[in-house]
Length: 112
Image (tube, rainbow, N blue to C red; front, side, top):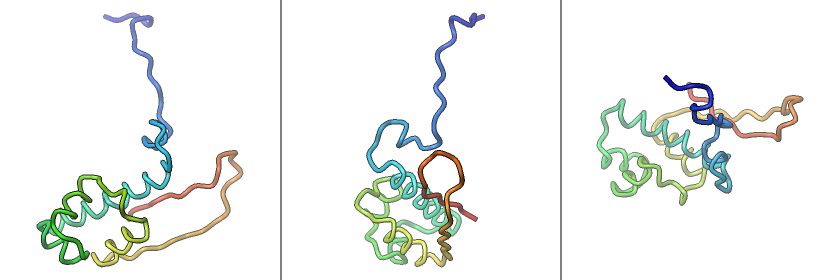
């Protein structure tokens, strides 16, 4: 049994792994990752092949494969939103004042 002094240090994350590892543009990268995760879920739930998904969103199969594996640096958030629209997803953008918290304003993705 490990005593308290034998326990490894635990560091709690911020909720954004990209920020936690010091990536530049971490918030944008997290947003893209969340949007691509939604695309992945849609492709899976519709049982689409990567080729069929590509025909819908306007990409070749190898590019769909890269996108779904997380290689999305070359795509803007706007373009990824276009992929979601092509997959018949409604997108709502809400702009509101940030709360009183001392954190900076942020971009958040909520998936219904």
